[in-house]
Structures are given as structure tokens and as C-alpha cells.
Length: 145
Image 1: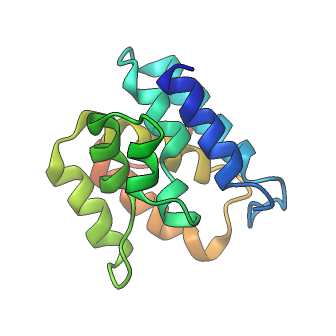
Image 2: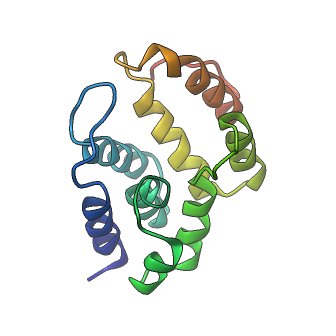
């Protein structure tokens, strides 16, 4: 099994029975859209792997050690750790840390993640923070592109 296949398998297991707040759809649909967007826009083969795993550690029982034990590479793990908000960390501080890391995989996946979150059905309580994060990471105001 390739690392990409393993990442997809892990994501599907980790997000079983989770649902999107905005639509009630299975959460894996969000992950699939992020993977699709980052794959279409970035040529680094690590980008879709990180995209599959970007919410696994934050939103499930999976740990970084579990990812290692399942053959996930250190560059991917580094990006996943950057994308994982730690307890007590504000969202703005989390976004600043991603930007300051200059990690191209983490930044690319977070931008794809934000693009998906900023769909028209984005919960109003989250819209402002996602728009601010978009500006922080892209240097441009949010507009659907």
C-alpha cells in the first residue's frame, strides 16, 4: 500500500461517524474536497497525503505515533502537526504559526481547507475567522476563485 493509499485509509477510519456542522454531510466529504483541490493546484506528491490527514490528529483518537506506525513519512507528519491546533491555542495564533513555519505543504493544505470552509453554507459564527485566516495565508481578501 502506498503512503497516499494509507493516508486515505486512515482518514476514512478516523472520520467515521463524524459529520460536517454546516451541512450534516459525512465529514469525509470535506476531506475529499480538500484533497481534490490541493491535488489540482500543487505538484508536490506529499500535498494530497497531508490533505487526507490534516484533521486526523485534531479530530480523532489517532496520534502522531499512530501515523508513524502506519508508514506515514516525517515530512507529512511535520505538516500534519503544524495543521493540528493544540488545546488552548487561539485560531489566529494557530494560523500565524502555520504561516511562520513557511512549510509549503501545511500552507497549501490549510488554504485548500479554508477554501472549502468558506463555501456559501459556512456557519456565520465561523465566517470572520476563516476570512481573516485566508488573508493571513494568501495576502488577499477572500473571494471565491
